[in-house]
Length: 346
Ligand code: KG4
Ligand code: ZN
Image 1 (cartoon, rainbow, N blue to C red):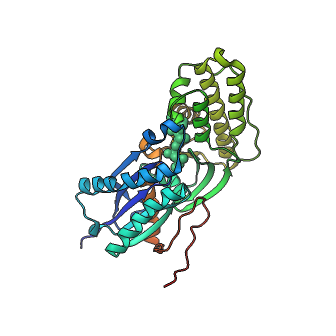
Image 2: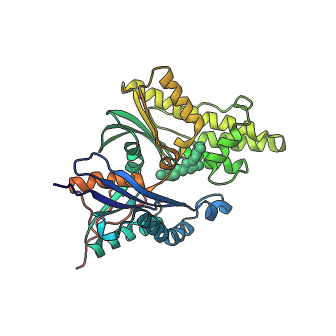
Image 3: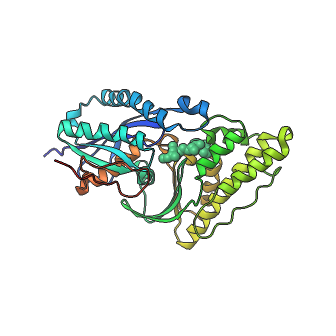
């Protein structure tokens, strides 16, 4: 008897990347596999403003989504009628941007009489490691992205316990703001990392951050960079400033990681979100492995660290097989609180 695969077409449009992914699983699989996926960045739209302009982001999603869908479907040689589930990120994110992806998924589900599943962007990032790693539970997971920095204890495919969160800026936001102060392009993380390679982290001192528990704080590091830039003015060595600033951000992330590994007595770690692309951070964590403080390090390949629809597909599949389908009246939400179900008038 042939087993029919389960196919999911997933959309991610919570911020400034438009992404579509087609995933497939055999009944009984824990996690689906990526068949095709496409990401259209909006960096050229937002670069001149030095940050994301929400209204322009929504308009760019409108323009980019259909070509991304067509590309994924034509590469996979599948039609809408062969999809079992349409899914989209519904929270947290920019409301106008979320609405584009979610409305597309709901519309396709409605027209083709298929399932619709609303997903959480952060759980998407957490699940991104399942696409490329055979994980063992429990493990510690750190999300370090442009909008979020949090630590989780992951106990199962669907069991994420939040143990720490940023009390102000996110790590990626600190990279972006620092890059802007140093006159670099957008997004700032990769640019700042590149400049830091030419500098020395010991020229300028950045005070260590002191926040209790497993929480993070990055705004003080940014304020220190503002003071440094103003104090040094034209004498500032930008590469040294970038190196010192990056070192301080990574020290803070790193100190919380090691503290949590000790506290929860786990030796497996995953690193997800855009900042996980940072080579310095990856190699510092890999060093922990060399020192035998870590037995496993799960980190997605660079294109799956930043926002993408494939990670949404993992969660959509897990919900789909549990029968946790979403209503077509599900709303979007800028925060991680549960998406609200609107009372239907009809
Ligand atoms: O996960 P993501 O695509 O979006 C959010 O969910 O926020 O992460 C984007 C963030 C940006 O802040 C970007 O500057 C940062 O990830 N980023 C980096 C690097 N590549 C991207 N930060 C540090 N080093 C990098 N190489
Ligand atoms: Zn993200």
